[in-house]
Length: 239
Image: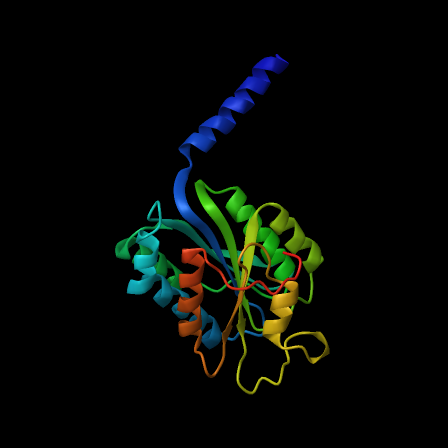
């Protein structure tokens, strides 16, 4: 009986692997939806990602890949118990499929609440990838936010666990004019904090959105780099 059960489990795993859809990249957008983000800023973020995904240069980058398709999901995070899947996994291979994702993103209601658990957002993103029906050559978590980790489990441990599973974590730091918030501890800039404490994995990098580089521009630049798989110089000395 044990042999039969073992065989059935093995067969199920093989079937799941065989039915997984191949893509060049599995990408989770992990966007800040915490209390520091008002409704206008939330829409700005969503619009920036929607515009980036439907832009001609990003679509060209997608179709130029070996498979010519990427799988994306969009979640927003707040406090430790608030991670909300805004748009479930969707394969983008052309303008039409990108537009479907963008329309879903812009029409979905807000759901996250509380303050800044980047660590739990990373854990949630890892689970999204591990339970999807796609098989990519690269797995990327794209964290965007305007502040540091405040709550939840250890950010260092969440990051280490994701990297051990082969993920790359990139970040987009949103620096709002006149906010007066340095971002990280001890007056550290937000981009330096994300560089030291959030990103990791092959080619990981931090992009910046501020008054000089609007969010939409930063999002498109970041997405082009992630699709190409070239990355930037990682700010981690050890990885």
